[in-house]
Length: 129
Image (cartoon, rainbow, N blue to C red):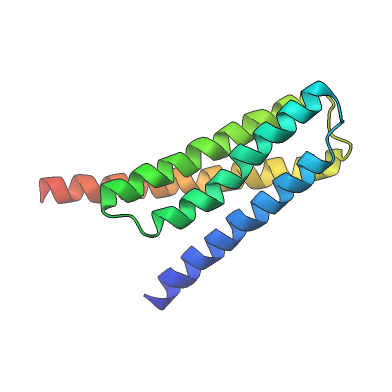
């Protein structure tokens, strides 16, 4: 049980660190209409995973937990698309930071895809059992 808590805490901290990185990217965007728009968008989608993961920890049921984790995944994917738009439009003044944040977003997506699949398997097993 303690190890499970540590894993959850580490993941929550990683999502918080990701949100901070996204805010850093936001500050480095060009101060144009496009840059400002994407800055606002990436702040919303990039901070949402940490907040929703925190909410998932108090889920009322396994289905509620799954729903909240799927929101985390959805927001991470939205952030990835936004990061790619920023890259292709050359709006970021720090391409190395952008690379790092995109890599982290991809790793987080992979973690949450596995989590969603794992929870779905448990739900299916409960229904069959």
